[in-house]
Image (cartoon, one colour):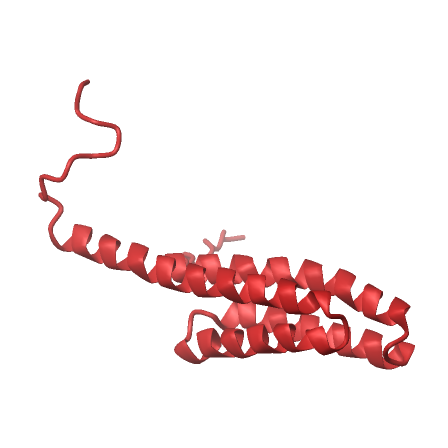
Length: 139
């Protein structure tokens, strides 16, 4: 029997720094929201079913956003979810602080990722740039 060689795999798309940083932030929020869901259920602010289903849906949206941040609309969707996380402060006032912290982190990661990508594009455009490397040249 003739041996069939497997099809060559397509190379994986390189993720941008912005995409990586934002998706890491969103996944961290998933863990925080899991525990926030338990706390909100325990406080009795909402009926148990509403608290749990709402938490699971919000967690699902955060996971979806962590996948689609490679698109411009995905980044915007992530910012909308940050507002939703802040809005959870209505149910548990500590979530105002947590939500603001994550919104600040998400915003920082967005701008820092864009800055890193810009520097990478500039380097690739002119790799002969004589800027010193961070390790120095005393080898």
